[in-house]
Image (tube, rainbow, N blue to C red; front, side):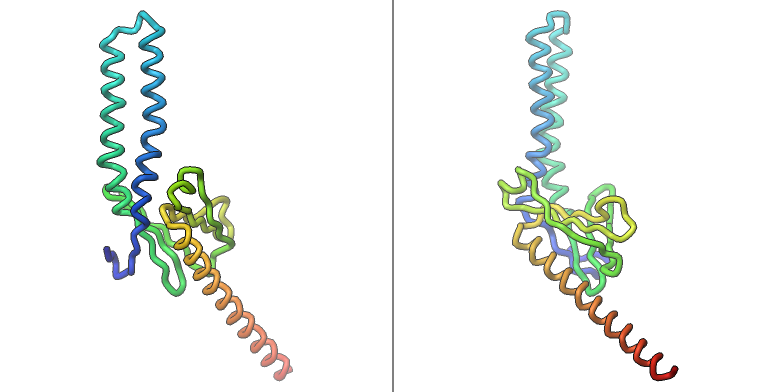
Length: 177
């Protein structure tokens, strides 16, 4: 997977299971609600319940066997010297890039399903933003920690270089005064 000469890394394959679980939960709840209505509300025609159940089953099959595997295959990220990017989308392509000089802070997040699968999300916030500007899901926890440490290392070295340049400029201006 190489797009626009970027070294893309796909997210972990367990991300597909995470997506499948995310599809199953609301559709199964909807199926239970339809079943309860079918049992307790006698005025609902059987055909309506049958069509509703068939629609939920169809959405479940599409989500679990088509959408989730496809979505996990087209989800990737890349880390370069001065930015980090995230690409997703088969039909509707989306790429988010965060330059390190705008990075305010980053964090690792895990929900219960992600924790069960050993996955994490790396979430990056930029200066001036009101929320997360980039979230990379489907990373192994160890990989997310490595990327976090790599990005922090790059940002720290840039800060140290900027401080050295500022101090050199201050010293130069003091000599000229």
